[in-house]
Length: 245
Image 1 (cartoon, one colour):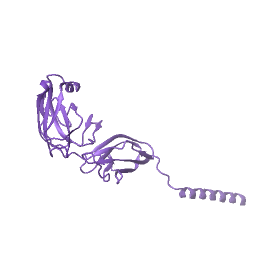
Image 2 (tube, one colour):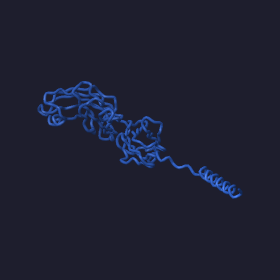
Image 3 (cartoon, helix red, strand yellow):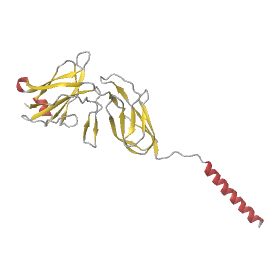
Image 4 (cartoon, one colour):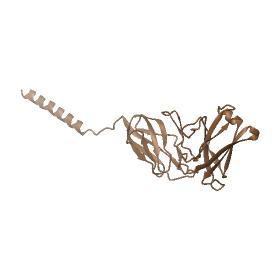
């Protein structure tokens, strides 16, 4: 009987010791969460370096967010694994989004650091069109506010559509940004330019112009199925029409 009692006491001591060790085990990190980090390079509308700090980066549809430091770096903490859309916002900057960020490890670094400009301050106050080049081209004239000159060039962008409701969100064709250094400005579209864009001779086209920034911050939005141009200035003259030569 004494032997049996001693054996029982030994077993009880082992169990108590084992339980005590479990309680003292340090907490392990959650294997299904991690940090998402990255950076931005910020510029003014003319493409000159600006303050990289103060841009908010958040995960769309959540309360998880971070703010960039003076080096433009950010880190989103304890983000559950998954695929996310990152939203970049700062006063005077157009909203920029990065879709399909894959996060499946404890430290995800977002490569391809974006260069983002401030929203354009250029307004388009006048716009007209006429035929040029012996009838083989279209001349578009306009005026910016502030005036464009050699010491204060302005950046503009044209949107084309087969309807009068052409805009930066409703277009068939968008042209690359153009820097103008004179007011009023003049821009020529040749017949071959228009045909290469998919238009047909004799077709009536509407064109509209907006102020744009050095870095347009444009991105493809898969939910809308089109390109977004967040830095254009919404103050624009009415669209004008022309007939494709």
